[in-house]
Length: 497
Image (cartoon, rainbow, N blue to C red; front, side):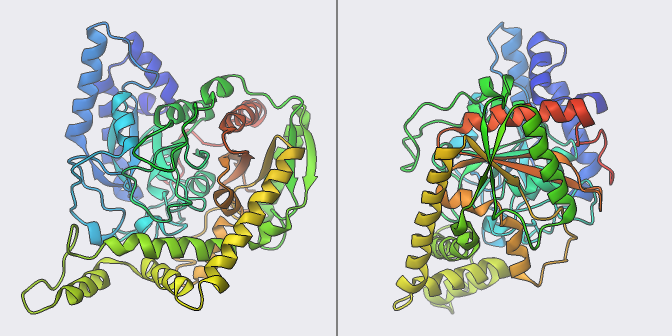
C-alpha cells in the first residue's frame, strides 16, 4: 500500500495503462489509507467506497478489452463537497444541506467520470466555502498532516489535507479569494486557480458568482496540469464559461522553463504582517528564478492594498443573494414545519439552525452593503476598486510575463488561534484576493519550509487571463530546480501521521 500511495498521478496512470497495477489495487490502497489516518485528519465528509471500487473495476475492464485509456484513467481523486454528485451526499460543509442527495452531477464531476478518474469521496470545507481554515465546517475542523494542531488552509482544507496525507494523489478545490492556493501553500502541495470561466461552475454550489472558480489540486505541477486539462473547457450550461480552447497546460508542464521570461515582483506583496521565514523562502525563490534565466522586474500596484476591503464587500454581497435560495421550503433542512408556523417562520427557523456563524456574518454584511442608501457607498465603490485592480494587472502584464509573490503571509496557524478574530482570519488571503477580483490565473507551489516552524511555504505565480500555460511553464521549472537543489518539500511521510 505505502508504495502505491506515494506514486504521482502520472505514474499511477502509466502503471495502470501498462497492466503493472490495476485500478482496483490503486483504489483499495487509497481507501485503506483513508481508513487508517482519516480519523485523525478528518479530510473527508463522505467516502464512497462502493462507488469508487465500481469505477475502478470499469477502468480495469476497459483495459482488458484493449480500449485506450485516458491520461488519468484509474487515478483516485478527492472531490471538494461543493460539487454536486448524483446519488452521493453534497453538504457544502453546512447543516442546511445535511443529507441532501443531488439528482445530477456537476459538469466537473461529469468530466472526471468521463475521464475514468476514480472519485473516492467528498472532502471537508468551510461552510459554503466561507473561510480560510476549514474551521467553519459544520462537521468539525480538518487537521494539517504536517502538524494536526494546525489548520490545513481554507476553504478547501479537506482536499489539501487529503493530498498531504497521501489519501489521494489528486483533488479538486474551488477558489473564491484563495481557497485553492492558500490550502496548497500551508500543506506543501500544488493548487491552481484557472482563469475565471476556464472551468465550468455548473453544479458547483455558489458562494460569490463573479469570483468562484473550480480548479485542480495535486502534489506535482504535472499532475495538476493533467487534471486541469480534464476539467477545463467551455460548457454551455454555464453562462460565464469561456468559449475558447483550453491553454496547452500539460505541454507547458512537461517543458518547464523561465529562460528569457520577465517575472514581476509586486511591492505591495510584502511588509508588515509577513512572517520572516515566508519572506526568506520567497526571496530565495526569486533568486532561483534569476539563476534559471528570468529577468526580475519590480512592480508598484497601489490598488492591491485595497483588494481585501473590496473583496469583503463584493463577496458577502453576492453570497447574500445566492444563499437566499436556502429557505427550508424547496430542499435541504427544514425546521419548524409542524403546522404551527408560517412559511416565513419556517424559513427563519431553518436558517437559524442551518447556517453557521461565519455564513450569517457574511449574509448580514452583504445585505447591508446592498441595502437602499448604502449600495453606492459600499458595493458600488468596491466594484470601482475592482476595476482599478484589473487595470493595474493589465499594465503590469505589459511589462512582465508572470508575477510572483508569497501565497500566504504566514505558515499554517493553530486551530482556534483566529477563530474569534475574523479580521485576522481574512488576512490569510491577502496575497490571493487580487487575482480573483481581476479574473486572472494563479498557482501556488511549495518553495520550502519556514525555518521558524518547519512548516511549508507557498510560492504564488500569477498569469494573465487565458495564459494558464505560463503558470505550468514557470511552476515546472521552479519545481524541477527545487527538487534538484534541495529535495521536494513534501516529505515521504507527513510528520503527524
